[in-house]
Structure formats: C-alpha cells, structure tokens
Length: 514
Image 1 (cartoon, rainbow, N blue to C red):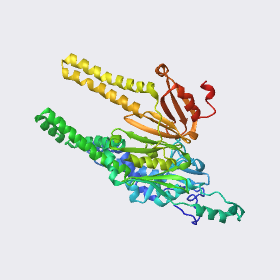
Image 2 (image 1 turned 90 degrees about the horizontal axis):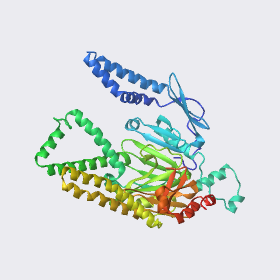
Image 3 (image 1 turned 30 degrees about the vertical axis):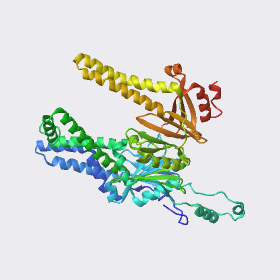
Image 4 (image 1 turned 45 degrees about the horizontal axis):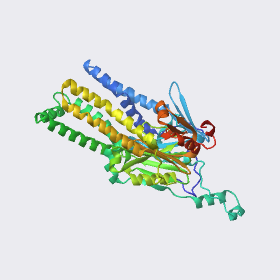
C-alpha cells in the first residue's frame, strides 16, 4: 500500500501493450490440466494396461501438459487508462474487458502452489450480474499494486477547507499536503482470536466443510478396502459393536460421528478462516478482508457501496453465544458460499455486534425492536404446530399398523417441537426504524437480523396472501440493489403497513396505500 509522499502509483504497465502472465505459470498450468482431465487419464491408463500398451498413460499425460503450456502462450493481458483486458484462446480468441470506473471488488487469491512460486490470482468484479475477470499468474507484488490502484484510483481523503485554507495558494503541492495530513493508516476492525475456534463445530461453514471432507474421506476409505465394504475395517467395527447390543452400538456410532464432525469442523474452520482480519482503509475508501491457511484470499469492498449488514445467529451457534456477520453491498457477485461478503467468521456475539457497529457507523445492537402483535404470533404458532403434526400423524399411523404403542407416544415429540419452534419464531420477530436504517429480524433455526440503509431503498413491496388478509397482516419488503435484493418485514399489522412503507420510501407510496 502506498503512502502520502510516495510517487504517484498508476496501473502497472498502463501503456496498452499486450503482455503474458508470469512464466512461472508454466509450472502450474500443466498440473491443473492433469487434474482437470484426471478421470480420462485414469481410463486411458487402465485401457492401455489391459492391452499391454503402458505408454498410453504417458502419452495422455504429455497431451495434458502440452495443453497447459498452450494455455500460457495463448493468454495475454493489458492495462489501458480505461480498461483491464484479458485475451485467451488459440484458434478462437476471447477478450474480456473490465472498465476501470466500474470495478466494484478485487479479490487476491493464492493457492499453495501459487504461494510457493510467489504468484497470485486477481479477480476483478464489475457487478453482481457480470462475470469476474481473472488474471491468474501475476506476481505477489503486481497483484497487491493492482488491487490498490483499482480501488484507490479516485479515492483521496480531503477535509473541508477552512477559511485560512481557502485563502492559501492552490495547486498540486497544496492538494498533496492536505491529502497527506488527512491520511489515516489502515485500522483493524476485527482480528480473529485463535480461541474462537471453539465455535467451529456450531457454525454452518464448519459443518459444511466437515460434511464435504467426510464425503470425500468415505469414498477414499471405501476404495482403499478399509471402508464400508463387506471386508472393510469400518464395517467390521460396526458388526462387533452390534454384537454388544443395539443400544450400545447406536450410542458408540453417535459418539464417533460427533467426534469426527467436530474434528473435521475444526479443520474446515482453520482452512477457511485462519488469520481472518478485517481492516478499513480510509484513504482508499475500502474494507479489506484477508484469510486462509493453505489458500490465502484477500477481498476488498468499497465503503461507499456498503448498504448494511446481516447478523446471523443460527442454531446451534446461538446456543453457545456465537454469531457471524456479512456485508450487504452492491456490485459483489456471490461465490456460492457467501464468503465474498463475510465480515466475521463464527465469533462471540458481543464481538460481532461491536464489529457491525463499527462497519455501519452506528450501534444498532441496543435498538428495541417493535413486536408485530397477536396475529403474527398466532401465525408463528399455527404454522410451526401444523408442520409438527405431519410427522406426528405418520407415527400414529405406523403405531396402529405395526401395533407399536411406543411410536404413538413418540408422536407427541414433533408437536412439542412445533410449539417450541412457534414460540421462538414469535419471540424473535420484530423490526425497528432509525434515522438511517431499517432493522428487521426473523427466523428461529436460521435467525438473522438485517440492518439496511433506508437511502439504499429503490422501492417497497407490500404483499398480502389469502391467509394474511384473513389475519389482518401484510409483509412489507424493502427493495434494494444490494445483497439479497429484498428484505421483508413479516406479518406486520395492517395499521402499521402504511407508516413503515412511507418511512422506507417517503413521499412515493402514500397514494397507493389509501
């Protein structure tokens, strides 16, 4: 990152000349191509071995390596004063352009191989609906300089001029002096504490990573002969446990699965969030997120495009006092896992609330949310209990058919769970309106609190289903270009609908609500 007083930094080689990526990618591209065509290579090796043609495998691997080399030779990029362009292809070329003035986010990712060779991949995002431009093969210094240039190109902190400054001589020297005086170094907003890894088994990211590792691991075990096959070690262990009794076997398996998921969740947490750090660069007007153990990733988000934040407190993370925070922002395309907008991994709820207040510039954790009344409460209970009645009815039918009274007794459990779920949903439902934000909270198992800037609203939607009309409630949604695009306030009483809609988009909706 550059500092005041340093020479003006421009886009690297912004002379319009086409250039190739680092020659060190010649060591990475062939490996990637072999991995891409691995199933086909295995098939060729097997077919060649069956026919006594052992050289087939080497020939197929050689073709993959040649394709990797050709990928490097046929890929070029260039920087102009207005665009970043990437051209690839040998016979049929494709050129992807990213206008400099439309850059919304810049991600710098480095896998283990990239880090070993001092390289990085830069993803330049220009909008939520557009494909990111990827420069895979810049050196680490080039990637860092490019990220800084793209995001800081038009950002400079310039304080309001006092009367004395107004009378002072103007010019580039004076502007640079004011910028240097106003410059603030990066401020760390959040730093992951290693002790917070205790939240890993309870967070969704850790559980998803655990299931993914478990799925791959089970396949490896099965293929290696120590898995679930008839002669497998795992199957043999289960059979021996079953000989001790059904209950003992079930308990042992449950304990083993819980321990395995816990260990894998911890591993997934470390791989995804090791060294997680959120910082604010006031000079560049961006938030920077860096994380990762083996594959490191650095993401930059423009502050001026931030429209709010979402605090997630799902079960069971909420039971241990944990939460996560993600940004509601424009111009960022979701990576499928929600990681592009993650501001904090599973962490203590007070830390997440404090981080949200810093990011938003206003502490909304103490804002009292308005409940939605008796009708909304009844709907929470009714829908949850009816959902529990379905499995309860199935258990009752099974008890009658199979003459198993114990199943009839168990039928009470889903109904009780439905009652507790309805109470929880009614308890957490609410909303509030501040001078800047709409705060809305809903859910139970996946409880989330959305804080959205009212100035970011592009419209408001009022929905009334058949059952909502009978209950005298409606759902009012704030429409915005950021995040999920639609943030609903569920089951609001009819007498409050007009007021809330007017607060979201003042001066535009009154005539439609009369």
